[in-house]
Image (cartoon, rainbow over all chains, first blue to last red; front, side, top):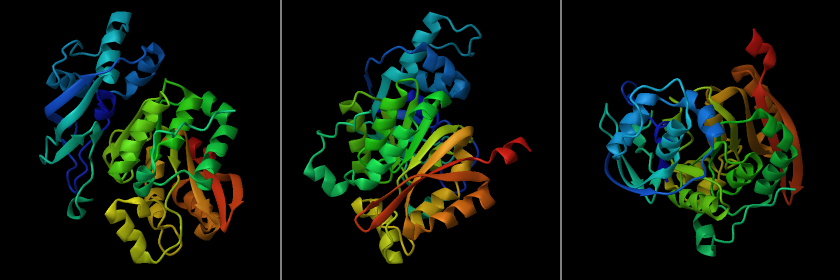
Length: 123
Length: 223
């Protein structure tokens, strides 16, 4: 299950690919929605770790436009519920994540991101 | 008493490809259980297990810490990643496996951000080629074959772990006597400013197993 919370932490790690290597871009994805228990404390605690623009862009690539472009200052319940859905309930089951810089493709298979590199690509 | 995670969904076929929890695994579980209160007080946001295998250890710490934590798990073996995922489902905890060596694609975003890091490495001394070949094959031998002093794989991660640890972060490592535990402790303090304690040790057959816990050396953090 590649959830967007995980996607928001993954960067390209090909040898020498050090700039503009985050966030990875989704394409050809199959997604599943799975309900998760709403946990506002977790969301508030995790907010400082999120790269907001990367999250909003990834959600839009997956067809979800519920998040505002700017991270709001007031964390009301409606916002937190949308954030909960985007971060934790959208699962990318199959697809490809592409580095915006070097265009390396990382496949997602059975919900697991394959971030392995060939020997000559390892930094 | 925290129950050992339910692994009844894993089969003999899974254990042909993925390390089956054994004495070393259970020693790490016991060490985490002994630290239960401290771990809860730390209120971690992110844990990271390197080489999660069956997913037993991450499922166990998820039982301790509950749902307010992101449980990242990496393994070089794709079959192990599938087992980690299914062990999360079986135990009603959300484990997020990533098929990769160590934590390379996470290091940009998780710089000094991980509160608990867990690593039960391939620590068994073998001939050198056996260790590197085992990692390249991405199969079950990669879960134990560790090279001449059993440190081939562990040493690579020890170079990188400090960069991932949050200020209050802690790193749990399994080792055996042949790995030269005092040597590991001395190097980590000298090179990376990480203070460590042996928090549990046990003899299991021929192996003398240890769990080490590393934290930042406070005198250095404040300076």
